[in-house]
Amino acid sequence: MQGSTSNQGMFWSQARELFEQIVSWLDSDTICGLEHSQIESKLLENR
Figure 1 (cartoon, rainbow, N blue to C red):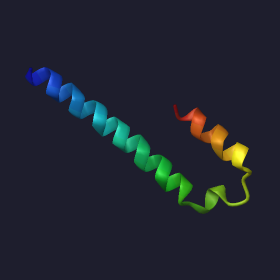
Figure 2 (cartoon, rainbow, N blue to C red; figure 1 turned 135 degrees about the horizontal axis):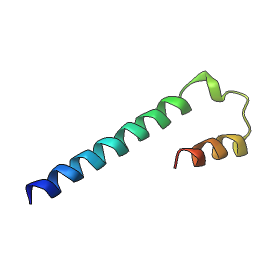
Figure 3 (tube, rainbow, N blue to C red; figure 1 turned 45 degrees about the vertical axis):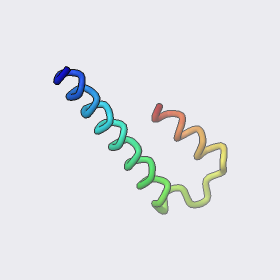
Figure 4 (cartoon, one colour; figure 1 turned 90 degrees about the vertical axis):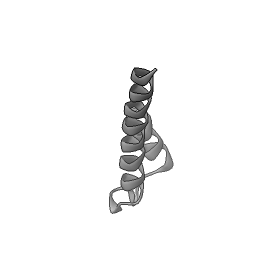
C-alpha cells in the first residue's frame, strides 16, 4: 500500500504545481487586454 500512497502524493504534487502556474499566469500582467476566449483557449492548452 506504500507505493500507492507515494503515487498519489506525486500526482497531487504535479497537479498542485500546474494549478500554481495557472494562478500565477492569471495574476500576471500578461493577460491584460486578452479577450475571454483567448484566456480560455490558453487554459485549455494546459490540460
